[in-house]
Amino acid sequence: MKRLTNKIAIVTGASRVNGIGTAICRELAREGADIFFTHWSKYDRMMNYFIEDDSDWSQHLMKEIRSLGVRCESMELDLSQPDAQGKLLDEVHEKLGSPSILVNNATHSRARQIT
Image (cartoon, rainbow, N blue to C red; front, side, top):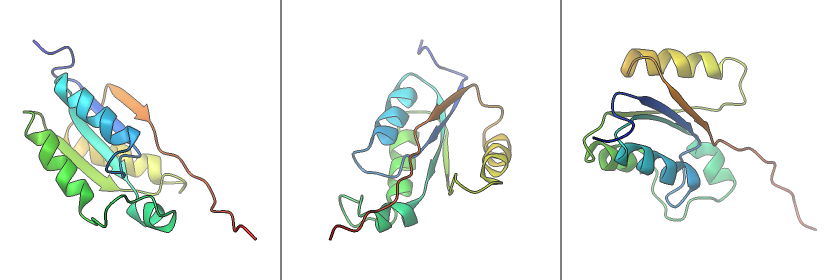
């Protein structure tokens, strides 16, 4: 039996094809956890973090995780907004149930202009 069966995990910041958030989602799913991840593609495009031009990356990741036999949902979310956490928890409860794991992987930085 997988160690995380019947657990629901929230992973923030799973926008990048080869990013840490994506790797965490995959590993938790391999251990049996249902996954809810956030992504903010607008920020990743602004920071030029996309490795490939794939605006539907979240859909690909959800399909991959579901193929491991667990449930998976996601949402585009700017976690710097004051109401973001409430929106996130409401969505997780509605789609999957009560979470038991939180991986706060989302980051934010400001692009610096090099002169």
